[in-house]
Image 1 (tube, rainbow, N blue to C red):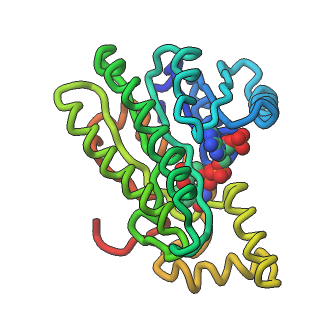
Image 2: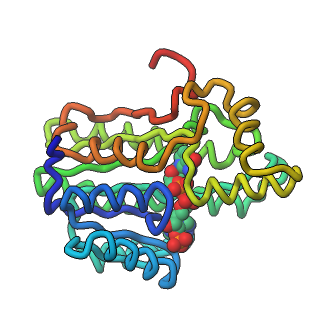
Length: 264
Ligand SMILES: NC(=O)c1ccc[n+]([C@@H]2O[C@H](COP(=O)([O-])OP(=O)(O)OC[C@H]3O[C@@H](n4cnc5c(N)ncnc54)[C@H](OP(=O)(O)O)[C@@H]3O)[C@@H](O)[C@H]2O)c1
């Protein structure tokens, strides 16, 4: 299937590793012009080298911006200029009790998970409308609906993204711009591997045992009963970014392995 993404200019936040990095690779496979982002020059250069090896002729750029800083989006906008596709992917999480989650934890998660997407969308959505075409995608999470007790702050930010996405989509009536949310389930990224390793150390078990127990106990509703591969999530992000998905707007699309119960 030709996704018609050749030469489209794409910005993916938080994309030196994990789902964002996989999305970047998929866009490069489709001939898009990709900008990746991370917090530090070191990890960005490493990921850029990795991409260059796989896509020697690929059009790519990297921008350091730490979204804990409320002005991080400014350097991106200044460096990059216009984009056709904005993937609001960056997201941080920490497994903590509600009582153990400080104001600072809440504020940092909102800053990175929500406000980075708000600020970038506030800039790029009008630009896309003026250009006559564009795609904005918010990477939410199954946690927005499952709300695990140890991830209440994170889940709250991911629920906020669903409202933000739907609200912005409503402003696109009659344009060729779409705004959608992607709802991944548990995905085996580097971040998830670290989370599994930390749990394994805490409980004196192997990461494999923790993974199995995780689906038995924490995600019994998962129909997939395994972690999704980052590429399985990236493929859906690519379709929602494509001109082929023009009739999907204001939607929240699940790639959750069936973990969110219900028919919709
Ligand atoms: N993995 C899952 O199971 C899962 C499930 C549902 C939803 N999601 C969502 O999917 C998205 C991607 O998740 P992931 O698991 O792929 O994440 P991840 O592996 O933890 O992502 C790491 C990436 O985020 C960047 N990053 C972290 N903090 C940043 C900051 N303050 N400013 C800029 N970049 C920052 C890192 O950059 P550097 O390290 O280079 O600085 C790196 O590129 C997130 O929104 C997450 O909530 C993930």
